[in-house]
Length: 65
Image (cartoon, rainbow, N blue to C red; front, top):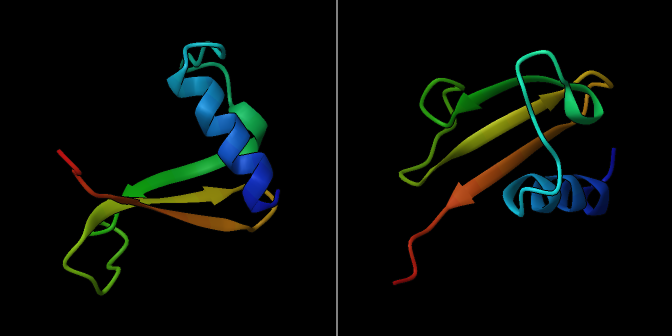
């Protein structure tokens, strides 16, 4: 999966266009961990998403307002 595909999948989930349940694995997500759990060296908060195909994405969470 590439960045654009991942972004579209995440957008669909957040827009409630994609119903995600425990028995549904959207586009091969293998594991999701917080930055702390994944031992990412940063002071930011966020998630590391590992895919079945070996790709990995990091989502940084920044409150803007």
